[in-house]
View (cartoon, rainbow, N blue to C red):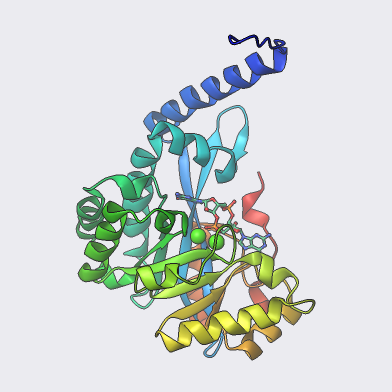
Length: 287
Ligand code: C2E
Ligand code: CA
Ligand code: CA
């Protein structure tokens, strides 16, 4: 290793590098061969019990490995820059799908910090909206605070361009990582998504106090709040009590393929069923 250092070679080093390279090649092929698909997870308003939107979640149907979850390939796509191409596909596909939904249903799309380094992103998003014929108000872009950690003027500039167009901006996974309340001052977010970790132990410890604090901060700045990962009726009641605006989680619905979500809209409108009647667990994510 130089400088009076020696290191032992481990076969696993080679294996890791090979696996990464393979995944990278597979990812390029996935784009070319259309192996990606989007699933959509509904969001439900606490006060009216109606669906207000869906979050688009990326799925990769790998020819040999089956469904690969996003967290297994998005980091590599970010490292290699492939996330830009994938992200553009996600945006175009999600906007086109949402254009066929009832007009009061929004679409939320995750945008990686890497995508926010590209000065033309706002232009490409505007292109996706107009190609789909979707009004900007129906699109919500979800970003994580990683975007705000470095005082990144390119990213902030893009967020302002999008906001000026009428696109809503949500701060995702709030409360994890390097969360700092000062990030809330760097951009006028429309929504805070409260991370699942506060929802899962809402009955115990300090989580409910934290959720309550976030709800108050949000309300004071005209932001709404979405509780993520709601799995039980008890969590739902506690969150409603604390004043959260919306919920998202397996209790109401897992992410589902486009066709299932369209059927869900029809059923939801037809008989105005309540939240728990759709709780079927993460069924569509398997396979
Ligand atoms: P996220 O944005 O926080 O998305 C929510 C994740 O929580 C999704 O995982 C969803 O399936 C899962 N989830 C929803 N309800 C529940 C619940 O009740 N219980 C539990 N345990 N989990 C629930 P998923 O689909 O595996 O996505 C993981 C992450 O991958 C996302 O986290 C997001 O950061 C990223 N991701 C997904 N699609 C995209 C995309 O198109 N672009 C980018 N840049 N990132 C994406
Ligand atoms: Ca998200
Ligand atoms: Ca999240």
